[in-house]
Image (cartoon, rainbow, N blue to C red):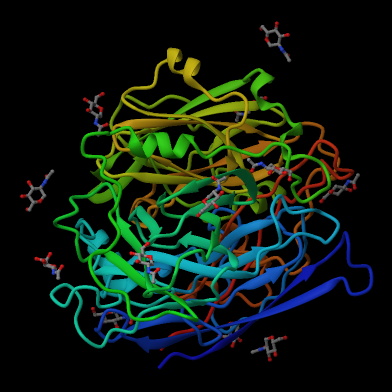
Length: 571
Ligand SMILES: *[C@@H]1O[C@H](CO)[C@@H](O)[C@H](O)[C@H]1NC(C)=O
Ligand SMILES: *[C@@H]1O[C@H](CO)[C@@H](O)[C@H](O)[C@H]1NC(C)=O
Ligand SMILES: *[C@@H]1O[C@H](CO)[C@@H](O)[C@H](O)[C@H]1NC(C)=O
Ligand SMILES: *[C@@H]1O[C@H](CO)[C@@H](O)[C@H](O)[C@H]1NC(C)=O
Ligand SMILES: *[C@@H]1O[C@H](CO)[C@@H](O)[C@H](O)[C@H]1NC(C)=O
Ligand SMILES: *[C@@H]1O[C@H](CO)[C@@H](O)[C@H](O)[C@H]1NC(C)=O
Ligand SMILES: *[C@@H]1O[C@H](CO)[C@@H](O)[C@H](O)[C@H]1NC(C)=O
Ligand SMILES: *[C@@H]1O[C@H](CO)[C@@H](O)[C@H](O)[C@H]1NC(C)=O
Ligand SMILES: *[C@@H]1O[C@H](CO)[C@@H](O)[C@H](O)[C@H]1NC(C)=O
Ligand SMILES: *[C@@H]1O[C@H](CO)[C@@H](O)[C@H](O)[C@H]1NC(C)=O
Ligand SMILES: *[C@@H]1O[C@H](CO)[C@@H](O)[C@H](O)[C@H]1NC(C)=O
Ligand SMILES: *[C@@H]1O[C@H](CO)[C@@H](O)[C@H](O)[C@H]1NC(C)=O
């Protein structure tokens, strides 16, 4: 029996809602039992729903709760956080960031809509539809964690869920009877904005809707050049908006498919999510084979070409009434280059660990910014190497020493055997290049220096690399991590510590009054129950914020990224 915990947080609408600047969201977490794949299992529900319901806000904040930046809230504590929203619009999601909890649910959409004065770069859609896709195991998150702790691989997932539901029975051999599947009801002739998020553990999914074009319009807070796709690969942690027009004759329902990619399709057949798109005038059930996945057996560059075809619409307005592309990243000189190589998990000190440049990250006991404020010595080191280490891999608390206002190039190299995605908190980056093989200086010649998409989560193909450019204009300590939950859990992450040398308290907000203390600062915590915090929750929003040059508060950013930090005790 799980005890419930009422969670409460506030958004402080500083900029545009003079009348009522506060918006409150209560999230209540609980375990519920569901059987999405026919096997009863406990999942983490938000306000009784799995997946969680959405938060729809008008503008965005930029916050991330991860272990390196804040203390978890111990069980039975209430913690309210107020934060000022920033100018970010688009499709994001939240999820619990500790202890593998995301594999059990606790996630939900986080949608930021435009203020009315900012035009959309497309006609206002007739409806907004949220679709959360993800690989799924019938083992719970503690069992999955135990497998990793025991040095085992997670193995093939048991299926793919679409909005928390199992597959439509498109094949009686592959799908058992009695599975509840997702149905999206639509009206003929209408155009919907369909937001798709890959909230899964580690599987890249190809998303497609039978007989329908997906007009890609937005990804992770930036408008794209609108282009039609028959299917799109959505990597773990990524979010997209598609405009889909219901232009078919409804002779039957249509399949909506999310199938695994970069794996042996014939072995992974059951790792396929199938939902139904149902027109109000539909004449019958969907039947027959699923629409084909991309066939890239003979065209290995297919996935990369598709990724690089996603480009930013520089003339569309972002959150503020100026074009997104006013920042000409292509003509800025790079100040530092970091080559970050991920390797397959290895045993370090007797434990299975995953590394970045030969270092497997160990979370500081005292969160980074608290350690700075209170001069805690040795909480972390600023010695993360800018090139892969050649020595034996090690566990460490190494952070990247980022130069404030620097413009850095990060080459993510995937020497692992699985496709990965990487996310950076507090920022979005320009995805300028991606390829199989080894990155060399000559690879720079292939970079898109004009209209690369700016986003916060990018994929890196196995045996390949992805190059991103980042403008370090946001002071703080920002998590750079593998989104593949197993690799992240095993230590494939670090932080970029960005210090403003002329610190005058205008570039970073102070810690909130109710900040929690832990680690070396535990004695500052009034009621310190942290040692018993075995089931604490920390939530993270896959997102970032953008600082635009024209913004009056361009330098006024958050240093304390504390959000959705929730907890509940479990008996
Ligand atoms: C937690 O906060 C909520 C909202 O303020 C309140 O209703 C609830 O009683 C609080 N719970 C505890 C245990 O303090
Ligand atoms: C880019 O944005 C502009 C401005 O909103 C819009 O008119 C145009 O259609 C968009 N172009 C593409 C290719 O999406
Ligand atoms: C997870 O599954 C294990 C058995 O595999 C069980 O012992 C444990 O209680 C479960 N935990 C939760 C939180 O459901
Ligand atoms: C169902 O899937 C099985 C296993 O892949 C396959 O052999 C069979 O042909 C499929 N049935 C139909 C009707 O497509
Ligand atoms: C996308 O496809 C739809 C048909 O589904 C078509 O009407 C539209 O013109 C296409 N848009 C672009 C930009 O190719
Ligand atoms: C509806 O469209 C399908 C596929 O495009 C076509 O095969 C079918 O004949 C159409 N049915 C009607 C009644 O127009
Ligand atoms: C995929 O798996 C099948 C079944 O085990 C096997 O026959 C086939 O060779 C595999 N294909 C590849 C490309 O490894
Ligand atoms: C970039 O570097 C080049 C060569 O070092 C220099 O000539 C140029 O002025 C720099 N551009 C900017 C915008 O700083
Ligand atoms: C971090 O980089 C700055 C220059 O950007 C340098 O002054 C400082 O000494 C570095 N800190 C460490 C610990 O290396
Ligand atoms: C990893 O790197 C080694 C040495 O450069 C190379 O031989 C191997 O092919 C790489 N493997 C992958 C999966 O990238
Ligand atoms: C900046 O913050 C520190 C501690 O947070 C405080 O002691 C100092 O007075 C502040 N400086 C200014 C200029 O506000
Ligand atoms: C937290 O710790 C304090 C002091 O040890 C204790 O009095 C209190 O009951 C604890 N609260 C909870 C909710 O466990």
